[in-house]
Length: 354
Image (cartoon, rainbow, N blue to C red):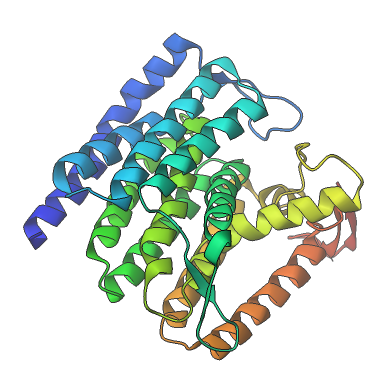
């Protein structure tokens, strides 16, 4: 595919998302897809929550018309459409968690059928480990897990969209470096669609992207990590996607640990995710989002650097990152719901309870 054609696909994705978003907002009001504020949510006013439709339309139109989609990539497109449809029904009718999970499993099964499968993982010391019969179960766990992880961080204006955009851009760059041209173009198309939508979603937001948007983004990113970055001949295959998606992955793991520690149901929502804790420390809505963007950017640069490393070095870097994340999470209260850290703009250092 020529540079001109690729550029046209990306520009079209941005334009379609940007100009369709106002129409999607009107449609959300008409269909009753409205997110009402409650004690667990940050926003104070009712907000249309079907904005992910703009990203979906832009991405699908440009990929299907501008990219030669076949094999695993067709599985991604079909599976993403299923996840999106389940998400949009949830935005309108509030589906149960089990129904949404069933939809994600069906979508993942479609992707796996078309060849989106993790066959190898990195050996921390050297070489690769063949997963054998564990390939398909691990693939299901990865795709469903990342799909829900992106949804979990969708708690502030522009947060999930921005983090997903940074992750998509990084995946595109790494795929480009490894000669994965189709994966790179699809990743960049996703980023262009997100950028077209972000002006309506960044603080103060005019719309939320809803489950249809967050689940769609999570599913596509998880699949691209498998078809592109993780299928590279590079030895650190699955390490790079883990680092790229560090924010949603670690936030999810810390949430599970925290709920086990507090003896609450794992699936019970709380207000101790990364963005909640930063808000409780006194940071503004916009500053909190920008801080998390910066952390995501740091992970992105680390992932790009890691693409040149061998397994032992990559393992050391990943262990160091994990240590930093655990220390930082404990300091701000993500592990236990309590933080010991100075409040910005205050000389007081105290224990801040959730």
